[in-house]
Length: 459
Image (cartoon, rainbow, N blue to C red; front, side, top):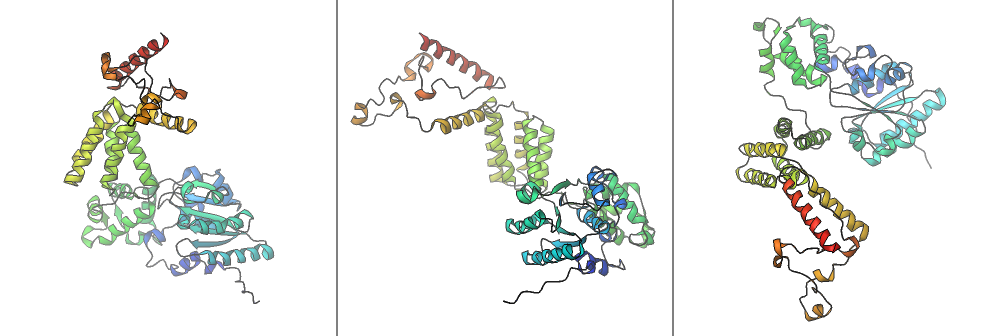
């Protein structure tokens, strides 16, 4: 049977990065963010927690002993740039691989070349996979044996939480490095470099930028270096000779009238903001709660999702400490469905503030969990005969309903010493009211009832 010929080891110039380098060798026509991308470790800005002189990552790069890693962070924080810097520091063959354009067949070719390279030239192969979270489980599994046996060293880049986006088996064989959003100071340094760099930046135009203009760009970029440089480039492209080679705050505001918030309704940031919203309400901080709620709405999240979270919260975290809380949440939901946005924002804000400032109790939630645990432990215990519904003569003959005492016939509507739980779990306490809000009154009543029942049973 004929065998498929193996491709020769890939030349660096034939890789994705090599092609980009050739295309942009003159640096004309490429976006400013691409032209200003650092090529040496010393030129990287930010990520001091990862790139300090004695950090694990820096030492591994400079010693060319990097093992498989996952670079995790928001867009524009330097994941691809760091990978390119690694490519200039390593004696290994560096092969970029796109999770969007590549497939398992392409990976097989890379692995075959890597094996030959290791066997005949004792040279390692580093495979850089951008947006590794876009690979499905089968595609990620294709990397696993080759990472495990050392055929390739993997560098994966992702904006998604690797705990969810990368297979556990592959993740366990990689060191995860988290890249944080760049600070305003980091972005200001990057912007000033671009204004001064005559070869790749805007230095040849001799632009002068006001400090407040650069700060406005840094804030609008929201920790993203690529976005910051893109804004600067757009601002510069819009300037006319009448502007006198000056980038002012007005020119920035004119070019960037509205910047979308960093928010992915299906990604980690969505769940981070939702978590902050719920925890702020639970922590009784109305200022933080309304802020996070508006973050969701401003970023385009579904208002019904926000309303649904408040409906759940009203019972789960407030319960009987403020029985009106769920009514307020239901009313806000009704306003949203009847009136729509943006007018329903007022009702949502009112409900958010009410829930945040209401006394808190998770006693009902805890009681529900305890009840479920009892059922899981004991199974379906039989209903006490006295509590069964005697609707036929045979049922009455079997004793259904016998011994049941009607509560309204007793003082206070309570039968002294009566039990309603199955015999096997009689006396178990599931609901423990707090001393907060309206539940304090419930707590006193429940305590008195339980004491009375206990006394009646002991006599």
